[in-house]
Length: 248
Image (tube, rainbow, N blue to C red):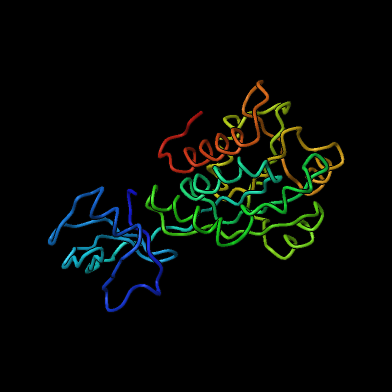
């Protein structure tokens, strides 16, 4: 844990008390004691530091100084549901890189049984998303929506204004790489990207994205596993958005 993550409901008069794995981490891993400080991060709130003022057995008491607010991510992500084991690994990384909304959808090349996996249960993925926040120090936890029908997503996103977003869809055989789009990514600042399953989007699915004004991009000539492509594309977009200099 680079940051100790907590929920607003745990904060009382700027005080926190931990008696779970966070307390164990502070005592056994960080080996901190009274008077020491630790970085803390409130989910969807402020972040800062906290001073340990008491340790009673396995309970740790802290006084918070919260001052900085994380900016909400400007990246929204559509992914065709990957293999559950891969999805379990992806949750914390998606939160760490910083995503505003995650839309998980079905595809003709996705096994329907994947949607019965425990990794799509709220308690399971919420815990993994918090793990990602403890890594990166960002506060905002991604909003997650799950659709077991491909078309259901487009029925809903018509109610969300994406007219000021650059809309991208991953295709390993696309003409332009993500770097070719660096300047336009910087100009828009808000990105809506769709990444398909292991076998790629079907022609009808890709046509659906193109009809909805998504532009095709690639990570290069190599065909990658979907989880590799997801992290690769998100990292590059994050790097472009966070850069103070033009990349091309």
